[in-house]
Image 1: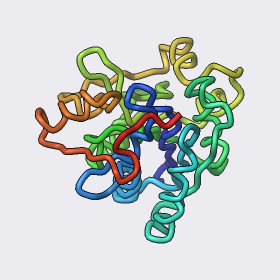
Image 2: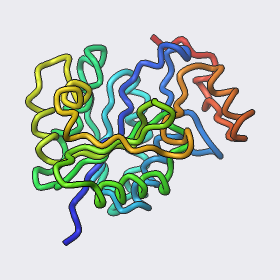
Image 3: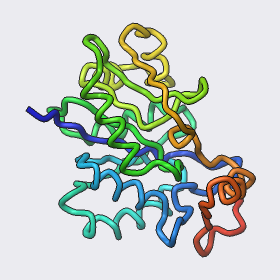
Length: 224
């Protein structure tokens, strides 16, 4: 029997190091990163998908609303605003998890600002999850000591995170349950590379020939 796996796409950050701009709206070949991630999730067969919003929700929500008809029914898209995104990623994750159905066997978590993560990396995570050792409740990629995404965890971890105190989240659970975590080595930085600064964006074009562009209205930054 195939496990039912839903997804959370994290897009709640402030982008404070890149001019307070929504990094998930950076475009690659004309499409915003958030759209590329949603299409990759559809290609990998992961549904439903809940997008965690916080900062810049007013700018991102119209993009999601416009995408929803084109992605249905493959994605079953929904999204939630975290009213206090500065309290940490745990709160944003909980807002999105609350939108997913209770009967899921596992949840995959991806970051909307990772330009090199696509369907292949999602399938890697799903295959790693299916092949995990007994007793493992969370799998996560690791490249040269750095933890990456996407990661996958089971229903019990989801429940624990949902019941965790404010200002805590998956990181605390992982630290307290190291014997239930599998950190899996990967061969490239695709799972760990994200965009935090303009220097990161420009370096991506030099090192990977991936050109990210700001859409009209976001070129200058500093949207606080």
